Image (tube, rainbow, N blue to C red; front, side, top):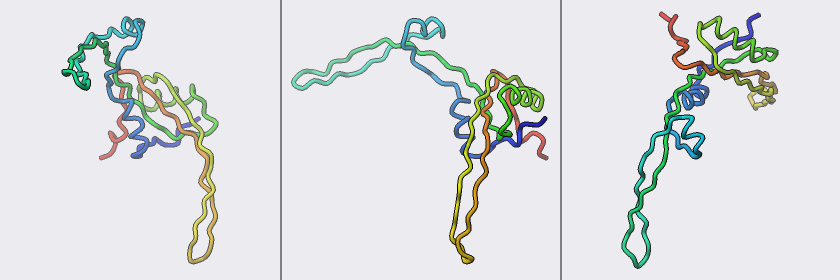
Length: 147
């Protein structure tokens, strides 16, 4: 059964997924995080200004590590689709390995507008969106089959 209705390749969805699709440099705050992520020691120097005294330069040691990029893609799916079904379908359709699937439901919204014919009432449909995170090294190219 096909659960995926269409991939979301809009500007808003791309902004959300591009934030997590880039590698990030993070600061390790605990000893456990330093050991787990193989954090690198860095020296930060800053100037302390005090009234009436000379400016004082101090140094601080911080530990940073690189968080690898995790490509994410958004899909509109059928409301009855569950995470495992979405995972299996994305893996079958695009020949990639899925790391995780996050789903969210959007409620239908009422809308109305004034026209020459008078007040027109309607509603937008409810839908379900899935954000699929792929394993490292995998990528989906939606534009590969366009000539």
